[in-house]
Image (cartoon, rainbow, N blue to C red):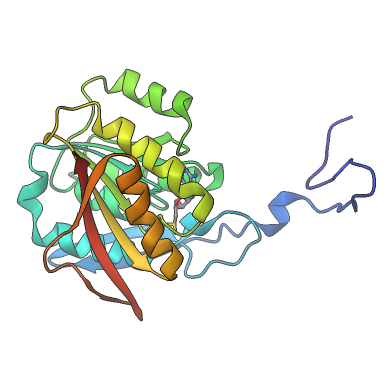
Length: 240
Ligand SMILES: C[S@@+](CC[C@H](N)C(=O)[O-])C[C@H]1O[C@@H](n2cnc3c(N)ncnc32)[C@H](O)[C@@H]1O
């Protein structure tokens, strides 16, 4: 018989007969964001409110930090191919597409991928081209290989905004980053990570995982700043 919702079958486990869709809020609002001279409109939620991993339904402070940096340094993107990890609603990748023409936005959550694709559609009719969404779960070689089959030349730039908040996913994130950086010769691909500090243990883990993966990690000069009421910084991460 088909399993319903979060039903558990194991002995001694409580059975909860509530369908997963009950928790999903997809009442997205068209919202305007301004980054320097760039104005973007996107569908997103204004606050997170569910039991499931739907952090990607709204725009996080790290995206604001990274997008302000991108809007001030658009020449960095000219002619570049870009892949974004944990794109959420796509605010960073879509901004990049204003300055370059090959942008792959990724996420692992099916519900988030739906709103990401809707936002890409919203922007594909304007001057932006070359924007696509792909499923990519960090550490999942099958997902990554499928993307690399379609992009055998790899990417010039890997981006991540506010994607370090769950300890167990950080080693997997860096596995994926390392594989992406290795598709290019040293110096030809970098990972820009907009990191927002919420716990000292995570601050240390991001640096130690980068080092454990044989990567160089440094702060982008002048990027350390307050976002919301938290401290953020942009890290540049490259092969050693
Ligand atoms: C806090 S949100 C940030 C979204 C967006 N970058 C922003 O700053 O607004 C984290 C994003 O990472 C995605 N994510 C979390 N764990 C992931 C994993 N293991 N693999 C791929 N994506 C993941 C989530 O689905 C979500 O979209």
